[in-house]
Length: 259
Image 1 (cartoon, helix red, strand yellow):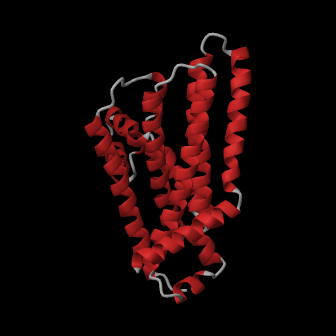
Image 2 (cartoon, rainbow, N blue to C red):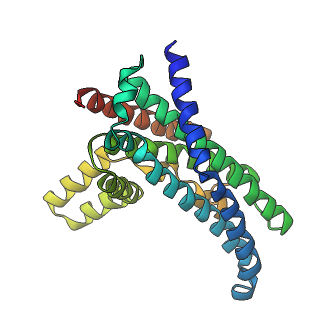
Image 3 (tube, rainbow, N blue to C red):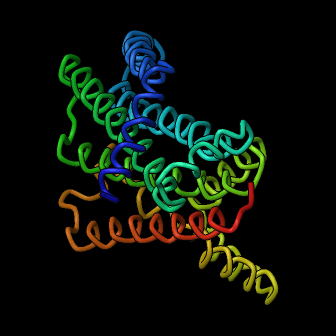
C-alpha cells in the first residue's frame, strides 16, 4: 500500500510537469544543437568536432540543472505557499510518502529528459560523422542523471523550510560549490591558514562532492579509455547515499512543520 501511494504521488508529479510543457525543452535542445552544428565550423574550422562534443554535453547539463532547481524547489514549497499542503496531509498519506513521491516523480521526468537529449545528441554526432566514444557518453549521461537527482534532493530539502527564491539561490550555490569542493580543500591547504583549512574541510565534508558525478570531460576528451568499474560503482553509490540522506533530512523537517 505504501508503494502504491508513493507511485500515485510520483505519477501525479510527472503528469503535472508534462502538462506544464517542460518536456518541450527537448525541442529547444535539438534546436540549439542544430544551430551549433551549423555555426561552429565557421568559427572553429579545425576543432569543431571537439567543441561540438563539449557543447552538447554542457548544454544538456545546463538545461537539466535549470529544470531541476526551478521545479525541485517548488515541489513542496509551492504546496506550502498555496496551502494545498493541507489537502495532501489530510489524505491517508504520510509526510514521508509525500516527500519520496515528489522526489521520484521529478526524477522520472529527469530520466526521460536526459535519455531523450542523449539520444538527440548521439544522432547529431552520427549524422555529422563526428568521432565519439558512445559508451563513455552513455555513462556520462547516467551520471548526469544521478547528479541531477541529488540536486533534486537538495532543492526539496531547502524548499521544505525556506521561501522559493531563497531555496533556488541556496540550491544553485550548493551546485556551484559542490563542483569545486576538492579544489577548495587544496586552496585551504595552500593558504596555510588553520581557520581557512578547517572551513574548506568542513565544506568538503558537509556539501556533496558533485565532481564525482561529473564525467563530461572523460566522455568528451577521452581522459579514461576504460572506465574504472569499481570507481563508477562507488561514485554512483555515493550519489544515491547522499540523496537518501538529504531526503531523510527533508522528511524530518517536513514532519515537524505545523500548517
